[in-house]
Image (tube, rainbow, N blue to C red):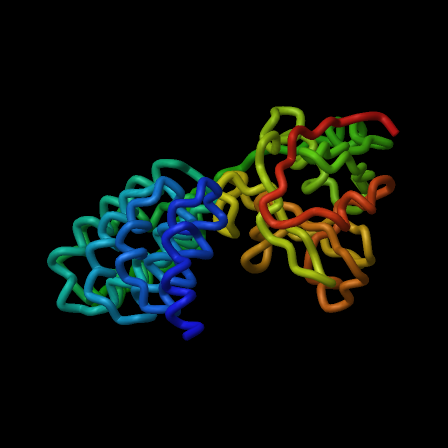
Length: 326
């Protein structure tokens, strides 16, 4: 009875104007076997919704996952591209999938973003699993990729495919930081105005975390965070936001070195997907988070408006961010 009631309720959520609701509707449809709903949502304008659909189809081992995945590879969202590569695990798909994967790899590479590592590594791993040695020529250029991890993976693949040792020669992207930039941020705060909630202030600890403080402050001055959201709310842990894609895999183009610290309630850190992969997404500790200490960057602390932070929910909008003198 409950199952039937849930299935009957799906359509109104599938058509909801808020994409977060449609994303959860896709997840529910996967659990309920609502494949008509998944079909409707598979062409949703929001890529987080499409990713939820594709994940549900993969989990259900549905044949439609392949078609949806091939279309997903043409989309801009990195998380969606990563999920699409999972849907193409069957080696018999290689003749059809390989050209699309190579096109996607080239397109994303031309964006020149450190933060494109995850989808590009996912594609390289899928191509490696296919084992089509005729594609070696199409990977040669990635030996000189700007990302050392991509260059190293390419060397590994080509060495195995050709039987000849290949050497990675990465050419990293190098955005600069100067001492003048550090000095200019001493005594400054970021004021985040949250739509409908009020504002909270982050005091920058530029001496302990100069790279992160400079990056976040610069992006704030450029209006980068305006209109973005806090896309993750983990009770008794953290809130996380500042992603143009409202997910873990979309952030500022360049990685930052970790500047680790102590994660007390109210401290503000940088989200990563591994060592030295910060991309200007920030999180605020809602409690003392000892498990994060000496592993994640701390670049500031909330010095006013912690009550606002405590009331932030998933999807709440950062109206604007100001850089002010404390």
